Amino acid sequence: MKTFVATLFFGFAVASSGVSAAEFSNAELVELGQSFAQAINELDADALDALISTRHLAQKCAEIAGDSAAEKQELLRAFKETIPNINERLLVELERQGSTAVFLRVHEFDGMRGPLVRYSVGDGYNYALLLPVRPARSGSGARIGDLYYATSGELLSETIGISTKLASSPSETFLGKLFGVNGVNRDLVSRFQKIGRLRQQNKLREAYEVLDQVPGSTRNHRLIVMNTLQISSQLDEDLYRKELQRLAKYHKDDPRAAFTLLDHYFYENDLDSAMSIIDLMEQSYGSDAVLFMFRANVELARNRIDDALGFAQTAMQLEPDNEDAHWTVLTMLVQSEMFGESVNVLQLLESEFGYVFAREDFQAEPMYNEFVKSKEFAQWIEVP
Image (cartoon, rainbow, N blue to C red; front, side, top):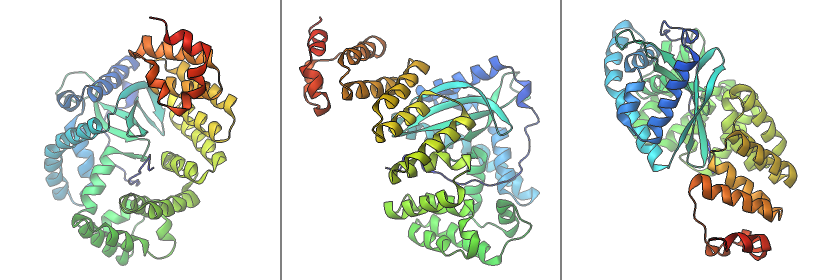
């Protein structure tokens, strides 16, 4: 299962919003993060639009995608119109996947400071660092000028700007900025221009083959690998796994690749590397329940049940309102035949999350066979 699918990262220098994150109080940033999480949980497109400074985000996208002043102005107008549509499509996708969001903390990473929000994405998670601005004509409140996504290692403005440019006709100047060099080989320019046309035509296999044939060490550049990863994830599992191996070989120490590589190391059963990646993620983004559940899963795969249970219980203690953490602890307690403690967690699920359990809920699941036979289960399930 492809839990994390990365996109692109590149080193553009974009225009500053003119407001340092240091100028915002913690209270302002906490409110911004909580409001963003609430907008996602309530699938409130109007609230999300109100939180994001479309002008600031559109300006950064235009700075990235435009070569000339005239092109940047034209793109600025276009991005101002399309960004609200992007927000709406995001909420539609999050609703489809049953996503929920939680504000974690005010966080600093790689010179950026803002509210850190985690939300579920299918079977995985995404972390968004909200970068604040204070628009001159909207009062004194903080708004979101850009978002940094931990799972892709890039800013939202970078995603929009580069995708727009690559889908049209990237110039030598643009690709030079993309790769951080003064000039690029004409062959590379031609390849990206061809890829843009192929992707517009949804000819993904052909687009992959064009990138896969990039000569020399350029084929292993992070930008190329992330492109081939994104395309291969839509083609077939074997090709996707091949590109993950390439990412691990050449970019395993890059924190921007951590989420993608975690999926890879679990698949390869390289549990030591998986634990190292989790440590790297914690160094970059801080502790939360999800990272401790990841650790629990690693130790469970190692058959170290006690260690796995300890990590899972830490996750539950860190975030008492995290339902997934409770189910993870319950699973490990039942497997360890710690039935009294299992009942305690079930009682928490009833009182804190509104569950109403019946005997047949457990009889249908083989995992609970021994638990259902226990006196602890019998005493608990009979209580009215």
